[in-house]
Image (cartoon, rainbow, N blue to C red; front, side, top):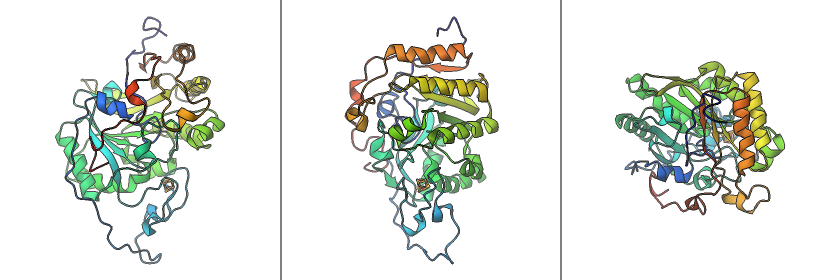
Length: 365
Ligand code: SF4
């Protein structure tokens, strides 16, 4: 795949592994540092739960009372203090927020994408670089007004968009926080930044939170999805999700300055020994959406977290494997998007989760 052969934009996304919540996707730690994310120390008060009305006949109806926000549909009564698979509670919990420059160029733009990294992912990726908050749940519980203040602050700082990173367990709370702002005339395009493991019924309900979609297609084989992310149903769910966004938002639309206003970017992360699945997803995309879809192809899988000890997941992708994927982009005629340069070695600062405590965090993290 070369620039000469196709008109696809070749961009080095050195530190831009997938940035949706929970999987090695979402904002990888090194991205936060290298993209000069401006640290936002939050002076917000940590929320104390009010006495909850847990009476099933008198408490207000809420999607949280029998949570089916994501495809796991575990039915947890979060209002009554029960925790489902993702362990998300009632108050929105976030780990970091701030102007973020590590997304694809039309999303980061010149002033940054207003990223909010939510804790508690619905996936369990063995290679997740964000596991301290996506799986272990670090972060701080906020009030709805506090979350609203964060959105407002990101807009005031000139961010191009509100980038919701792994938002699915928190959509009702995000909706409530954003609605008042929008009514008050404060509005940015929403970036829905996701692993792809979404419920389209939920997306129907909260569709106003998606103007731009950053959607992964990670696996094409349910067994891989089960082993890598404990999400056997991922393949069907992610493809349905991608189509939902595509049918609603269509191809990426940018303004005169090249800043994204609307549309879909599909991210394909090459996984070791599973590049053929990324190729299969590209082939599926070519049929399902056509090759005008913007694709973002990434090479920098890094074996961190549980993957370091797991045969088959404990190595980088080889260059010859990655070439199969970049050749497929060309052969299938995709002509819009970004291909990350191949990187043979994992950046040393990725390994070991060496994240300074509190940097960029809301509270202690
Ligand atoms: S968002 Fe969490 S609690 Fe709700 S269905 Fe999914 S895993 Fe269960």
